[in-house]
Image (cartoon, rainbow over all chains, first blue to last red; front, top):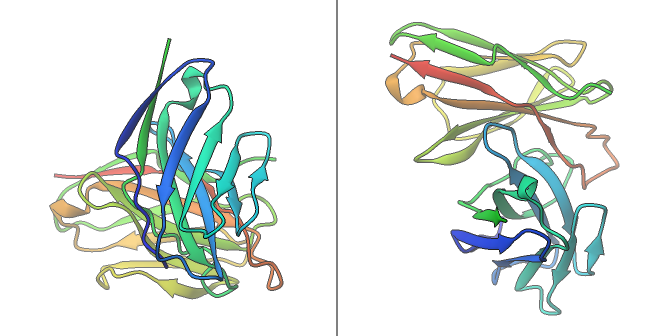
Length: 113
Length: 116
């Protein structure tokens, strides 16, 4: 699976959009971009994933650049409850390795009043 | 629908002992995977079970083992505990149907193991 690079920490004011970048310059054509987050003392929580098109769900939006070498997770209106470590994961998907995620160090997002 | 349930939530053991952790997946989920989280190494994949068979294994010594029962519930065992085994052990479940390749994982809250 391709390696990812994320900033170690970011701050965001409550109510503003949080934009979390992820670099995955060695991504292959068959690798997906996944985002999970981990709130303190809890297990990771799935947020969103995509292959090459932008994706949006009730939690966030995922913007993948045309060359797929980087992506941005957008939380449109961050709240204090969004304070967490956000992990960007790039992985090939097949039924044999679906559950094997390689987590990096992630970005610690601090949402403040 | 109930989430992934892990028991116990906290556990204290001493070096040399063994420990068994339990995980009940979301109803209908057939795949259960285990992860270890430490401050130094982060989240690392231990192994995955599907239909009572180990399907994937991470880079951990043989002291770490697991199994899955016919109802998809899973246990992991660590024998001859070492201080470095102190960690948060997380279990995740997924549907893992053979024709679906983009399954998301649902994690439990973990078992915090302290080895003294």
